[in-house]
Amino acid sequence: MSLRSVVNRGLLKLLVAVIAVVVVIVAVDVRLVFDAIIQVSLGDILVLAALSFLLIGASVWKWGCFLEYLGISAGFWRLFRLYLVGYFVNVFTPSFVGGDVVRSLYVGPSVDKAHAVSATFLERYTGVVAMLAMALCAVFISKAVTFEIQLLVVFLSIGCGLATWFVFAGTIGKLARRLHAPEKIIRMVDRVHEGLVWGVEDFTLVAKTLAISLLFHLLTVVNTAAVANAIGWSAVPWTGLLIVVPLILIVGAVPISPQGLGIQEGAFVFFLTSVGATPDHALAIALLLRVKSYVLAIFGGILWLGIRSPRILASNDHP
Image (cartoon, rainbow, N blue to C red; front, top):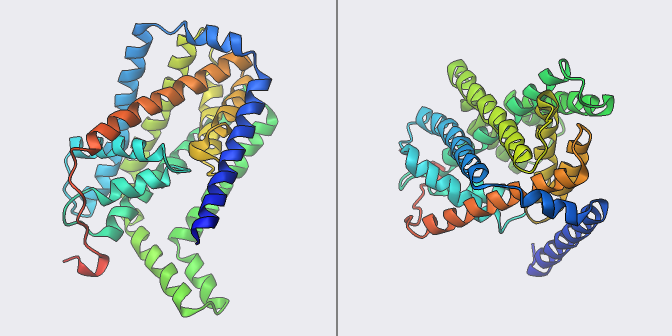
């Protein structure tokens, strides 16, 4: 890919972000958003800081489970620091992938690159599965969301199930062979499959990481509710949040603007208003959560200065 095409893609994503931000701003009363944000107290900030620690801690715990299964030794606090570094890198990349790659490379001085990256991917992927499972279960007990949103959750869950089957059952490789794809493509597909399938071969590992993922996403709901309470929205429908928070995270992860800027805020406004929030409260929640992620990113950038450059083994160099 040429430098020009990279620049053009970057400019296009920036344009998307600008348009999305303008649309969101037009849809709300900015003065009311500001009034909601200034209600946040020091006590609220301390609660959100504690929740941030728990959220990152849960992610690090799960990441560490996959690494430990591979025989990769990395202490909790080192992984915690690397997670914050990932936050910093994500500020400058279109999605969370950039931060995931960087933290994978810094896991240890003599770590198999393929295994380190696959462990990070599985940490993310089990999170998506648990998140959609949580939302799907809530669909059957909540009356706080519309039928259309319920249907969206069902379709996304089916899509996730099919994707899981395609990736982990070797279906993509079989399909590539049936279609007589080039040998280079088939080898690449087989390598990706081999690099991931180890993570689902152990039932105990799968059950443990899915349970941690569920804990993490329950904490994201608590985190959202805590911000809502801080800005004055106290009548939060908990079962509704169990459904719409995962949808907001999925929309915000779509890499069509820098770090989901504008897109994520629009998702907050759309989905939170569907469960009873006012547009100004919804945008205030989105902005506070974004500011929180930037504060974590600043800490990550500072910590990165004290972490040695990675020396990672290629897959064929691993003992």
